Length: 295
Image 1 (cartoon, rainbow, N blue to C red):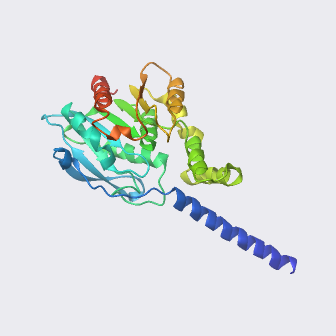
Image 2 (cartoon, helix red, strand yellow):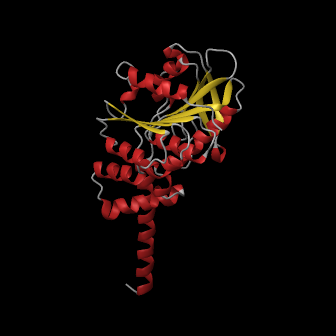
């Protein structure tokens, strides 16, 4: 074989290999898009099904549950984790509503009944949360200076990222946040027996290029020092998805006494069982009730 055809064949194989790698990463890391089977009516509350515009001309599916009392009420935005949907956060709805909050539960892009996009990511979760907050601040039944964020897992990391970038978040509650996206992804790859060298290292580099952010810049371990509103980090001692030590690491990186850490019994998703975590949810609601208005 002459040098030119050989070189072309190598380039061709490299191109095919690159396409296969990108397809593998995007397909392998894409979340399941599961539609809700239950709604606020199933927990005895009235609600409005709304569509909220977000980035890239996309739209988010959401439930808006108004506060029981007339007039402008404090509000909470609840954001699910990777592969979840608004239904995931339903266990928080009744306690928040009983405490006088209006509540928005929504599906991030590529989740539930929200629009698909070319990809989703922690920054895009945060972007969606940012747009939901802007929408909620304009709602006539909501006090715009008393909007809190509650997130679970990657939703918690996104809520912390939003709170670090805005000065109008009244309070934020993080449920089972990971300390750093790279560490979380390395655990994910290891569980699937994908070696870090060289494949895992390539995956992490590719993901950072696609999402347009360095992991170090968006990690809860980094952004917590920039969050100025009252912050509650909640983590379960039996969390096998994100070790409880990561909550301690985030807490240790804080920049003030406005950040609190609450270690509870249970696993990564145990907040979803109302019967087992009634006390923890009550503490969460009390924390939000005590938060002052945002600046």
